Image 1 (spheres, helix red, strand yellow):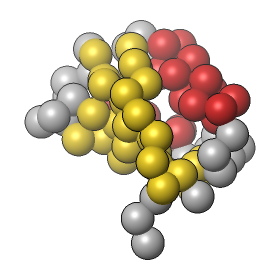
Image 2: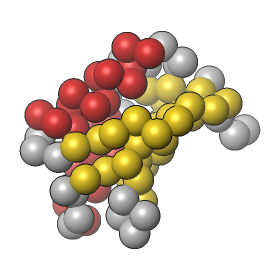
Image 3: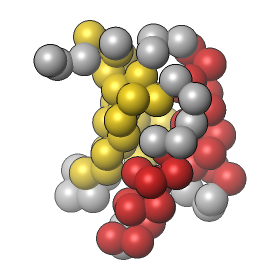
Length: 77
């Protein structure tokens, strides 16, 4: 399991964050996803497949925001 971090641009309200979290968890390969609005970050635990990173950035773009990949590390247990 890996953890990816993204900068989140444009999503500043609670409903934006909830939508990203709820729908992001439905993406194949995503174990968990959560948004930190104060830091404008998305954190995602996922299967380690680079295509999963692309899926979350594409999904965030499709709903009108931007997610820029920052880094990837082993997920904390």
